[in-house]
Length: 91
Image (tube, rainbow, N blue to C red):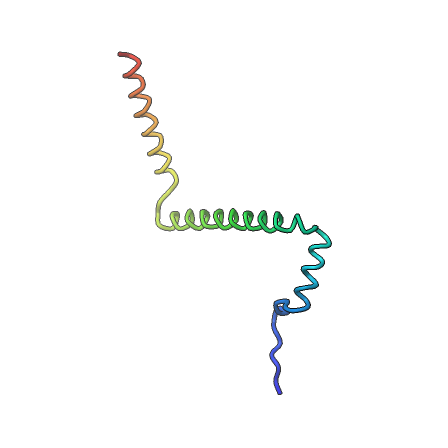
């Protein structure tokens, strides 16, 4: 008979999971566990957003778009706004 052994050690289930939860409650207290889980989830979300932004920037660079063209457009918009402001103040 051949038995399959997990490569990574497997996912804890049953009694192992109960022991892990008991240790967490003893270490952090029942009140802090939800806060800890919430902050961990928020950190994972921020990490995911940052990773997606980096991937998008890399994709843009591969497509030939550069950040310089975006900055030039913003400078042109700022120049137009300054010109309109100068016209309004002079009248």
